[in-house]
Length: 119
Image 1 (cartoon, rainbow, N blue to C red):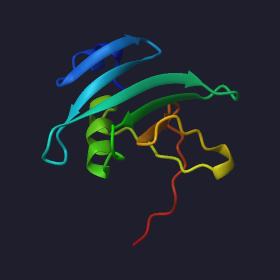
Image 2: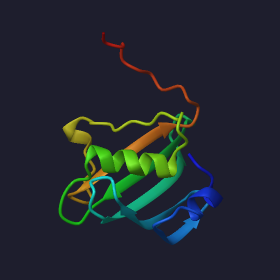
Image 3: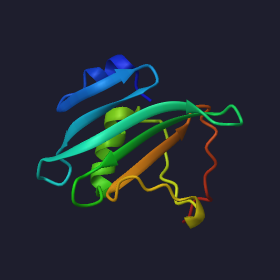
Image 4: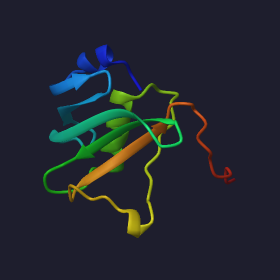
């Protein structure tokens, strides 16, 4: 994940609050060809096993973010060669605080397991 200083310098971004553990912002997205204001929350947290996870959530007021919009936010908050994922947990573990919000996660260790490459 980019540094706090890099995030604070992002264009088209209004930072609500931020510190080394994360923050809240409004971001103007342009990926779909139309400008759309999104709410973004980012954080860095340690899980129960001691693994450090970087997290970015993206929410729009009336629809889910598109793949292109999620890619735009990924480029804003992560470096080009960092991998992050969107999880689809068991339904019994869903946490849905906003109807039109999607999340990206990155294990800071870089030890993200990947499925086999097709082709």
